[in-house]
Image 1: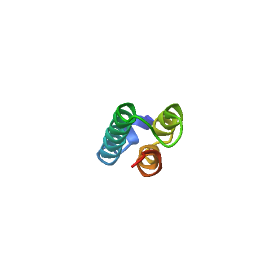
Image 2 (image 1 turned 90 degrees about the vertical axis):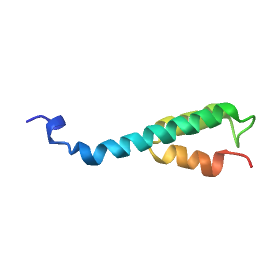
Image 3 (image 1 turned 180 degrees about the vertical axis):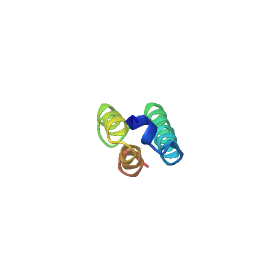
Image 4 (image 1 turned 90 degrees about the horizontal axis):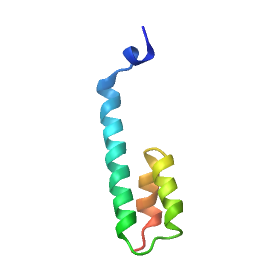
Length: 65
């Protein structure tokens, strides 16, 4: 029995889908805005590498109003 067989995909799949949607929306928003609070490359790294919380952190602190 492998590790992939023991994972409950009914629980994991929605979390992965939400993560991917949040990441895509945050990256698209980052590309479209003129300026962010800090360098855009830094926010791109935060969005991509800090799973689930990265896009949320960007939307709270990275966008200028």
